[in-house]
Image (cartoon, rainbow, N blue to C red):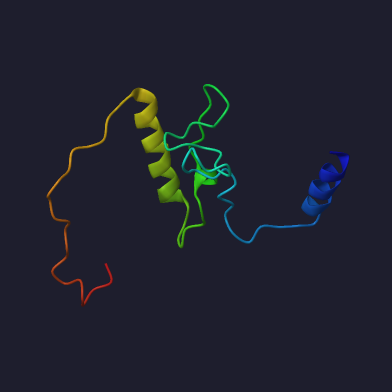
Length: 104
């Protein structure tokens, strides 16, 4: 074990991150031994502990992590409060009539 600590410690000295860290606590199927968090954000083998941040993403997103992290936190909140899934909606999203000619 001491050897592992030396490797971890030496790797953190002088290193920097170029991207937002994510994916350190993989979410996935309970049958997969590599998953740390289940689909309800519960940490496996630890009672009464959930993770609701970007660390449960299976891979880094193409954009900023802020919006997906908020969505994970809201979903975890629904699980904690015992809320079910939202009912399906057939509403169509808004498409600006000048979308081809205008940036925003």
